[in-house]
Image (cartoon, rainbow, N blue to C red; front, side):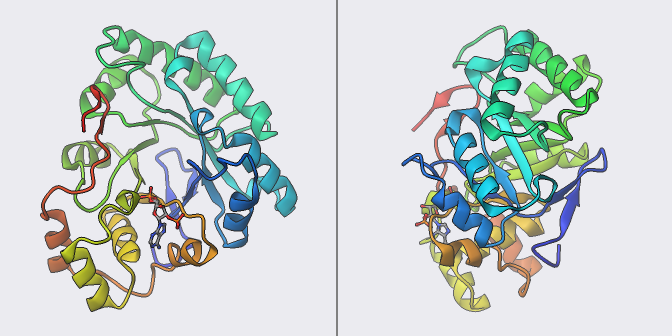
Length: 283
Ligand code: A2P
């Protein structure tokens, strides 16, 4: 990736911008102004979810921007309580209505388990995915995928499905790089996306990240985002400030050396949210 307007190509040929804007907590006041600012800052890929309650604010911000629908890439997600064949069809219709659109660019299953210890997850995934495959084949979704799925979850889905997921969105940042899951996905051409690519700021004070920020004359956040891009991962940073929104797209004028990539990859564990897909909150 050489430029903020460059795209990754999903395995079905759909082009997806190489950096997106994460809308989680971007509309806690139920106002669309933060998302509006992100559009003004240049973001054209917005990651939302029914759980975030930002779909309606995103729709408002897009409408106010007068940018054509096809020039904005919209991704949303099915929440834990919406999984299942019929439930997914209903959830999708509700998401489309809140987003005031007739198609999604990307639709993900948000979380593998409805609650920790849920035993019927294999059939639940199968039924949910079947509904998503149908919506995809009807042309209502341009790409379908997963979020927070671990290799054993994906392996089950692959045994029961027609369509290989195009995306898996997982927590990824220096100090929490989920090597097994990332490698599993990349070997199968499943695009990995990073939620909390800055570790919700928990990694920005780390001595190595600070040292590299000084060395490359960038901010610690830019080190984290560039690190994701150099791992062929698509970061979805959040910010409420215009300056930081812009900074988080300014990632193409420096290159982290191979040696420094290894140092980040092997730094001590840091900044994990504590959310484990099978266990719920662990810390
Ligand atoms: P703010 O909204 O004040 O910019 P993540 O995307 O990993 O979940 O992290 C989001 C957090 O990171 C927010 O608290 C956000 O605060 C902060 N943040 C976003 N961009 C930057 C940046 N470039 N430098 C420092 N903090 C940032």
